[in-house]
Each structure stands twice: as structure tokens, then as C-alpha cells.
Length: 254
Image (tube, rainbow, N blue to C red):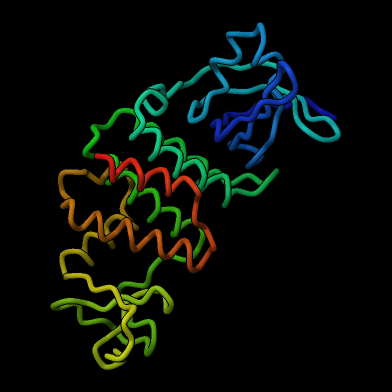
């Protein structure tokens, strides 16, 4: 049993007993951690306001035999906008659930933690029209960090260098580009990307987030990338957050 300090993002919370909450955190130093916030539902208003989903804090936690207990919280960013607007909440919920499902308990992954912190901060400060862009960036970077990034430059069947002129066939099952020689015209589950879309996808996957600007990517391309990366995460990693249904509902409403 020991006390430790770590930065963490609140992924989700559940009521526990009459006065407590069970909080799922993604921490910088220990990966996914479940912790109890004593009195968060009753009497401790300062604590209940800090353990809300998508908020980012410095925690002092006491690790017992089972669940950790929250001893102290210093706020870094509340990311309030992500809870106050349904559309922003829907996008942030998808991001948080991807991390909750892919992050490991008590196993640090600073790159994954940094991606979560940066994307939630970007979403908290972006315009409504930029939410799709940051979700695409998040999903593409998540694929890269989890080791299943789409292959763009070489054919996933023969291994030869791709000629990216014209539309390029993209296979979720094979993991990326398929050249015209290997293309099976009888298979109907290919996605097709233009040269500009292939270049844009490559940039989203490999460029630093700070170098990527929403205005440089068309809405049509982002919609293609959203579907493509979502399919990749579902097929190769069995990651399909329930929060996606919430997001689809909000999109249909708007």
C-alpha cells in the first residue's frame, strides 16, 4: 500500500454507495486506474466538481489492496466546454472511451496519455466545425500508437511501391493500399481515396499535431478519414466505442 502522485484525465464516473463516486482515470505514470472519490456525491462539492469526465488534474492517490482512493486534487484544466454542449460532449466521449478500452491498467503509456490530453484540450477550445478534424487526428494517431497504422506507400498484397495517381483502392482487411495489379474487381469492400486524400491522410498520421491545421483539410476528406480510421480500429483492434452511437445521433439531429 502506498501514496503516489500523478497527472490524470477523468474518463468516466459512477455513483458508489450513498456518497462516493468510482472514477476511471487515465494517468501519466500508471495507465488506467480506478479510484474512489470519497464524499463526491454528498457534502464535498469542491471534489465533485473536479472529478467530472474530460477534466485534467494532478492527483494524489492512495493505492490499497483493491481500488485506489483520491486524497487530493489540484486542477490543471476543467475542459468545461466538453460537458456543457451536447455535440462537444459526444466527440469527447468517443475519445475517452477509445482510451478507456485501449489503455492498460497500471501500465504507463505516456504517448497515449499525451494524445488524450492534447486532443481534449484542442476540442475544448475549437469551433464546432473543427470537432470532426480533431476526432480524425485522434483516431489516426491512436492507430499509429497501437501499431496498426494504415499502409499508404506500398501495396499491402505484393509489397511493391504504390503509384498513387488517380484513385487508390484501400482495403481495411489487408491494412491499406492495394495496387491496380493486385486489385480484385470482384471484391466490393474497397474504399477509394484520391491522390490529395492519400497525401492528407499520410500527413494526419505522421505530422506532429501542432503542425496540423483544420483549415487545410476539406470536410469531405475528413468524413472519409473518420469512417476509414473507425473501420481500422474496429477490424484490427476490436475497438468500437458505444459512444459512437451517441455521436451519430447528435450528428443526425444537426
